[in-house]
Length: 130
Image 1 (cartoon, rainbow, N blue to C red):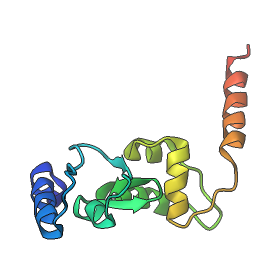
Image 2: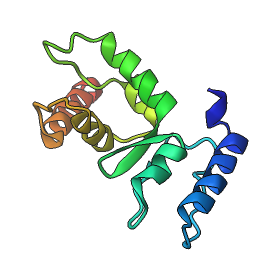
Image 3: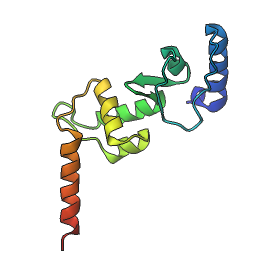
C-alpha cells in the first residue's frame, strides 16, 4: 500500500511527534523492514502510526500481517497447521519469533521448539546417511 512507503511514513511520524509532543527522538522504522523489535518506553500509537501491529516482543508491518493471514487461511486451522518456510520468509522471522506472533494472534502451539528441532535434526541426519 502506498501509505506504507517511506515518505508518507516519515510524514506521519513527524506529525505524530508534533501532536503527541514526544521529546525523545524516535526515528521511523527503516524502509524495507517487515518486523521491528518493541522499544521500551515507546507508546503503542508509534507502531500504529508507523504502519505496524504490535504483537508480543515485535511489531509486524500490517501489509505483511495481511499476507501472513492469507497464508494461514489456506491452511486447515481447525485441524492445526505447520508454520511454513513461506511464512518465515515473508515475515523475516525465526521460527521462535513467528511462534510468538502466531500465539499473540490467538493460535496455540502443540510442539515445543525443542521437539521440532529434534525432528528436523533427525530428518536431516536421515538424509545424510547413505
